[in-house]
Image (cartoon, rainbow, N blue to C red):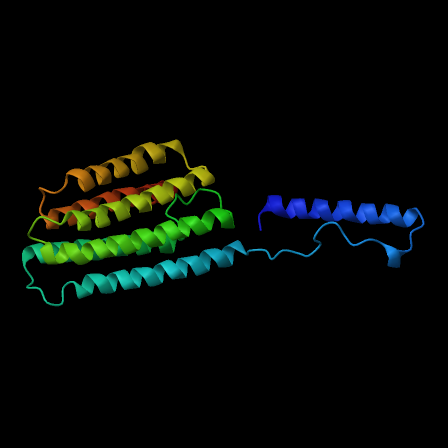
Length: 232
């Protein structure tokens, strides 16, 4: 329940109580008062700390399933250099996503941003979860084709999923009033690279796409680490 909705409910309750009090002053017996015009029932409130914890746990579960997808992609492959590089990049991407979730909550917006209202947090959680699922599906096709050109569908899964992750962070950061330098120095360059590789990345071998994907995510995650280092 948002602060605005809570204030509106209190105002309606006070207005209705004043109306009933006026009727009593006019001589109407309390047992003959008309039914209330507004709903005086209390609305359940969301505990933000608990909400963040539960949503963060769900993201960790999805990350576990994504890791299982990466492992399953290696079950019947010869461990060539390209397969090893691609698998390691996929594993490091999931570790990076897990680290962001553990340190900064289920939304990857900068940690200095204000807390999100529940109506803002739930769509952000959906975006993060969907992005992880797409990335995992993409690596499920990338690793077996590590030494070849990646199929367009799988390339879009990987880089589209990462782009959705960044876009979700941008939307959450807008609500949380993130600093302008984060948008210009980290979010915007990451989105531009992801879009360029998704559209024009077909000539590149699949293993190099895996390295690019990890490099972009590592750069995107570097902002909060840089801020923490300067504060230390």
